[in-house]
Amino acid sequence: MSGLQLHELSLSYGEQPILERLNLEIPEGQLVSILGASGSGKSSLLRLIAGLQEPSQGHLHWRGQPIREPSPECGVVFQDYALFPWLNMRDNISLAIRQVQPHLSSASVRRLADGHLLQVGLGSASLRYPFELSGGMQQRGAIARAFALGSPLLLLDEPFGALDPVNRARLQDVLASVWQAARSAKTVLFVTHDVDEALYLGDRVIILGSSPGRVIADLPVPFNRPRYRQTLLASGEFHALREQISDLLVADILRGLSSTRHSELSS
Amino acid sequence: MNDTSLTSTGVLGLALRPWLSRLKAQREALLLWPALLLIWQLASYFTPLGANPLVPSPVTTFHALWLSLPELWAGTLSSFGILLPGFALAVLLGVGLGLWVGSRERVGRVCLPFARVVAPIPPTVYIPYAIAILPTFLASAIFVVFIGAFWPIFQSAVAGAHSLDRRYRDNARTLGLQGLRYWRLVLLPAALPHIFSGMAVGLGFAFILLTVAELFGANVGLGRFVQYYADFADYPRMVAGIIYTGLVTFLSMSLLEQLRQRLLFWQRR
Image (cartoon, rainbow over all chains, first blue to last red):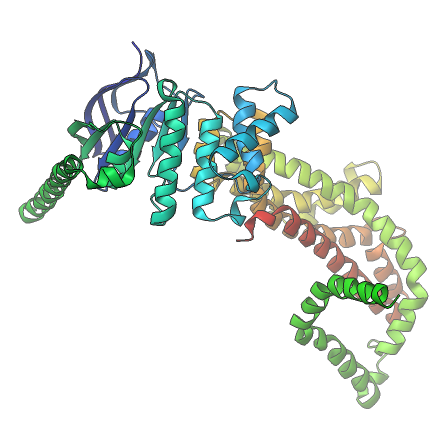
């Protein structure tokens, strides 16, 4: 069976449940947005899928194979860029290329790395170090590195969370265009707090409820591609869907608050 | 012609600018030195201290230093013949073993309790034993310098591996970096700030142990120079030796600091 399957997936830290009995099927080639309040276990879910952590219960499979440890099949872009600061941008990207194509000549690796940087608008920054670049540029570098790894499964953990609105919109477009260029070859799971971003990018929006994290809604996004921001934001369907998602998120937050108050009162 | 001279002046000015600005920033610290020398010289002229042969005046001391330069230079070469192999071995083994012990939980569980017991033993106590069991003075002096520098470097490398940022570890794992590539591209560079702190402490210890070891059995060397003239009550040469040794130590530490700044350029934010 192809794609990503999560079966009765649970995670807890000691007594504290983080994720509870998640069941999901994500076919290959989909771009899935994952939304949820803070503490809903979004990042933990990505760590499990990346093989960086083991679940307390349940199973994960990618292309029919169980996920037990990180592999080149799965690229990850973390929230805080996490490029290696002692390597320049080209070397950061080359690192990923050499992992998957160890026999390439240095000149070819360099050419490929520069191509990936060009793709995310960093053509002129290949010899610069991460600390010399803005947060937006670093994040584009991290995305370029994940693309350079060429993984069929790509996990992005709030990659644009710390960016200003202009850079955020720009990077959303970069991600959408790069994903579309490799459509059937790349499955993307994109964690975000931003409802508009989730709808603009996703084929599908999965909403995680909090305390513990579980799927409270799995909604298809019916907009055709390529999507145009202005047109989308002006459409009634977009607004209705945004309203529906916002209501679900607010209801979950209120439920969390009332259960906290209830447990405080009873103790 | 005029243009050329203007250009060379400009280039020279540009080249000197960082040096001059650093000098400007440290002018108060630099003024302390002539001030102390002046106080020392005046004290030797106008106080009973000047009559005491144990406290030679700056002029006498620097004259002795000038006369002793060939001997001190030979002593420096001999001392570095002990210091460099001992320190290099300490860096090599301290960093290698420290990163290994610090990055493997099981190895750390076995080795760190032993290190906690052995590391605090004052390295000077090894000197008589090293001289007794090793065949030559050179071998025992190198061993003592090695022991003095090894533990601070080892401990800092362990700390560097322990404090490896989870982001870098996760990134390395998702990229599939393993073995030597992981060590070379992730673990070692990430631990370098800690390692350099340990190397600075280790180098300080290495100099202390070098001069102490030379007191025991060397015929030549910086520590030997000071001890030799102290035995003959030639205090101008003895003080000159102390000043010279201080200068050599300072220059060595400065070189290490330059190397640190060069390799840790990525910490400039």
